[in-house]
Image 1 (cartoon, rainbow, N blue to C red):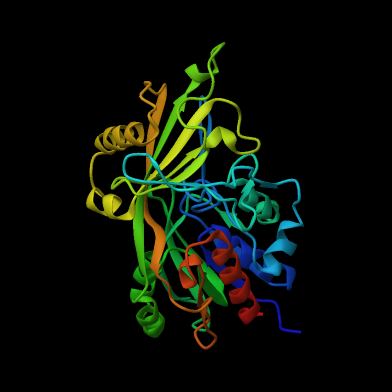
Image 2: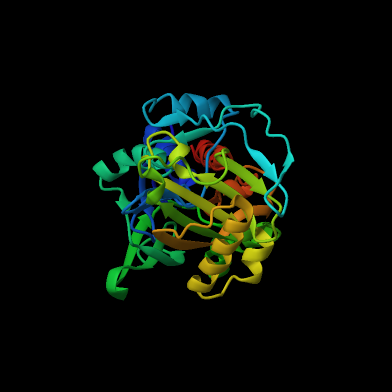
Length: 347
């Protein structure tokens, strides 16, 4: 049996938590570092006075039997989403292709997309192996043991800290962030070169709530469908959040902008983005009522355009590994498979 090692994992999304769980089950010790205040990555849920919004991934499918086995460990979390008929709309909101039942079930965690990763991360929280609000800025050889690694980090209030004594380091973050960290690590230059060909697009997300739809005598606003892909130049995807299991009844919509439009308006003021996407949403859905709640979220690294082409990277000599959905594609399951297979390589 391989001797127990202490492994640092940077990031706390699906790939990171899957990798961490697998390593711990094999007898290794992990410490997970996450710059945000919570886990989940793009499996993100934002709260509001009117209910939740899934701001990143909208649903997931399960094709790999290992993912299904993992899902079965938390059967109360994963729910089938009944809105399996996804419409395809033209730029004017007209149905361009008949909505057909999905070839495979669409799954959503309940009560929000972040629930699955949060549940899987609970043992890490219990063992105090999760460092939130901690951004890793630099990876370098440990000053006390050159065979190990240490991480330089910043936290709340720009406080700095050095964590050391790691036998290996896993980067489970978007490829541009991984490349930036590797660029400061001379011994990892070959890994940085390998991921340089990966490209990822941004995405602006709009969240809208219409509680007036719950007034007596009112039915759901706008279209009868609950999810659609759109060819409108501003909008790529729309979801009626209240159609998802466990989400609450208030009429809420999540709107995701197209990659091209998001890139063009990447650095726009959020209020300007909100106004433009709200106008496009009204054009596509016919919902012209004033939203009681509106908000935006910008994802700098949302959807993989050019993946790495393999499930992960692991350099046993240096003890550095990389995983993430971007290794294979952009699906939630891609992140799971990447994190799992990296952990198995390390083991």
